[in-house]
Each structure stands twice: as structure tokens, then as C-alpha cells.
Amino acid sequence: MTLGLQWWITMATSLEKLCTIKQKLTFMARDLHKQHIESVVNEALSSANVNLQDLDAVAVTVKPGLALSLRVGLDYALKLVEKSGKPLIPIHHMEAHALTARMIQRIDFPFLVLLVSGGHCLLAVARGVSDFLLLGHGMDDSPGDAFDKTARQLKLKNLPQFAEVPGGVAIETLAKLGNPKAFAFPHVLTQTPNCHFSFAGIKFAAKRLIESEEISQDVSASSVLPNAADVCASFQFGVLQHLAKRVQRGLLFCELKGLLPETNKTLVVSGGVASNKFLRAGLVKVCDKYSCKVVCPPPKLCTDNGIMIAWNGMEKLLSQEDFAQDPENVDIQPRCPLGVDISEEVSNTALKLPRIKLLDT
Ligand code: KG4
Ligand code: ZN
Image 1: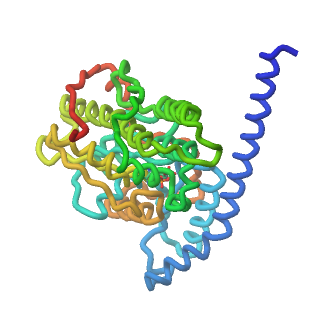
Image 2 (image 1 turned 90 degrees about the vertical axis):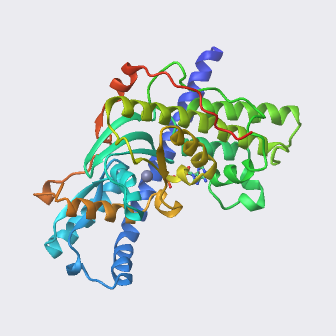
Image 3 (image 1 turned 30 degrees about the horizontal axis):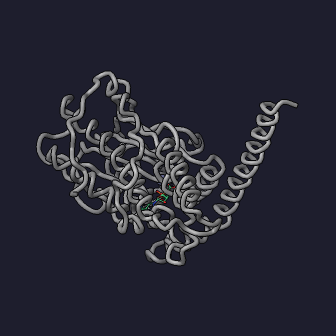
């Protein structure tokens, strides 16, 4: 057997194993949903001191997401609707993320929204409760995945203070002690003048850097690099540079096309990665140049949560939009982009970006 053929067989076997693990995890997620959905709903009702008949409607996520988990939610919501006679409001997971900030403070439409999480990355203009223009979306790994895998590669969980925290939090904390210019990370998609995102290159660069630093510093299998803080700070700066360019182009595009108000422009940043204060501060620097304020929901509303679905249901209820006329015919949509995709128009506009200084030093 040639070495090449052997390599392919090994790869195929590993991929097969990975697919089986992924499949098992989706079944586990479905079972956990089934097991807990009733008690979670009952607990929410009793802590709000209301019963099913007191509700105005039942809102449920139907798109996008894991098919098996969406199905559990929809089936349960349909049961509640049948029992109560209340209307059903189907919710788009990303629309819900995008509008959560309106629960905290007044933000009028239209506004710009950046969603950065473990599952998605996108930049859009929110024009109404159910009206979005998609300027750009993730083309490969999500930013959250890049943070989590880099933290794992650095073995940050072996440090007691990071044993129980998400990878992104560990990197942000350690980065405060490091130099963001210690290592140069690749500038991503600089030749493509659009608002799409790519984190695979930054993630791979971090992996290569950690591997070579571990060899050159003779770090043992379970130890953490002595200069891990510099790696974290430089990685985080690499992520910021990429996000900042996309947001800057988004703002310029909106200015050119009159998509945002001339005064009182707002960028909402949401999703788990939006909890990162270093990234927020960098994005504020970009937005300041375009007289745009930055709003981030508090971390517990940035990450996936049920409140954002309820809030979105209420927004739709108040604007009388998107009620399911025939709940029995509502179905799940595991894949469903957000709004109207105008990313090609953004790309064709080929806007050049003036330089913005992202670091104070
Ligand atoms: O929105 P989210 O809770 O769920 C998914 O969409 O999956 O996002 C989770 C992601 C994780 O990858 C986590 O590491 C990342 O958000 N994250 C952070 C921070 N806090 C959570 N990333 C960077 N900096 C943080 N402070
Ligand atoms: Zn999410």
C-alpha cells in the first residue's frame, strides 16, 4: 500500500469516527431537551407566578439549529398551543439574538448588528422586527470555536483558575497580562472587499504557533507555555483586527447606501464572544470614527438563552408579525440564513478602508 493511500484511509476512518461522535452528541442533546423541557417551562411559569392561560402566545425557535433539538421544542410548543388555544409564534434564533439588546434599552430601527458566538458570525442591518439585510456571514469556523480550540491547544484548563471557565473567558483573562504585538497573526481576507468572516486561518496560525513555541521552549505534555499570555493577547488582537475591518466596511457601506440614520447610529454586538471586553473596546474605536455608538447586552443575554426567544415573541406579538395562521403546518428549518442576503452588493462596492489604530500603545 502506498503512503498516500494509507493517509487517505486513516483520514477517512478519523472522519467516520468524528461523524459518529457528532451524531451521538446530537442524540444526547435531543434526549436532554426532552428530559428537561417540561420542568423548565413549569419552573418559568411558577417563578413568574402565572399559568398557561395567562400567556398571550407561545413563541418557539424553529430555525436554524440542530434538527432533533428544534423538533423537541416545536412538538412541545404545539402541545401547549393545543391545550391553551394561544397563538404560536415561530422564532428565528439569529433574529432573536439580534434584537435582545432592545429589551435593555431603547434602540430604534434601523441599526447594525454583529453576532459573534460559538455557532455563528454575521453582520446585518436590522430594519424591523422581521426585516434584516445580511451584509456578511461566517465562511468557516466561528469565532467562539477559534477561542475554544486555541484555549484547548494552550491547555489552559490545566491551570486551576481556568479549569471551569469557557475557553474565550480564559483567553481574555490571560491576555490582559500579555503583549498583543508579541506575535503577528495573519491578516484575514484582506484581498476580498466584503463583510464575510473567516476564523479558520487565525485558529490554524494559533495552533502552529503554540506547537512551535512548545518545541522551542521544551514544554512538557501537560504544562502551559510560559509565554501563554503573549499568545492569548496576540491571538485576541488578530481576531479583533478581522472583526474591526468587517464592521468598518459595514459602516461605510451603510453610509454610502443610506441604510443607517445620519445621527444616532448604533452597532449592537451580541453572542457569547461579545462578552469579551477587549474586542468591545476595539470595536468602539472603529465605531467612534463613524459617530456610531456600541451597545452590548449583558453577558447572560449575549449567550444562548430562553429570554431572547420570549422577547422576540413579544416584539412580534406587539408588531402583529409572523403569527402562525395554521400551527400544525409550522415546520423546523435546520438551515436558514438571516434576512435578505446583500453580501454580493457589498463585495461589488469594493470599499477601501482607511486605517484605524486599534491599540492605545
Ligand atoms: O453564544 P454562545 O453562548 O453559544 C453558542 O452560540 O454556542 O457562545 C459561546 C462561545 C464559546 O465559544 C465561548 O468560548 C465564547 O462564546 N465566549 C467568549 C467569551 N465568553 C464566552 N469568547 C471570547 N471572550 C469571552 N469573554
Ligand atoms: Zn446562538
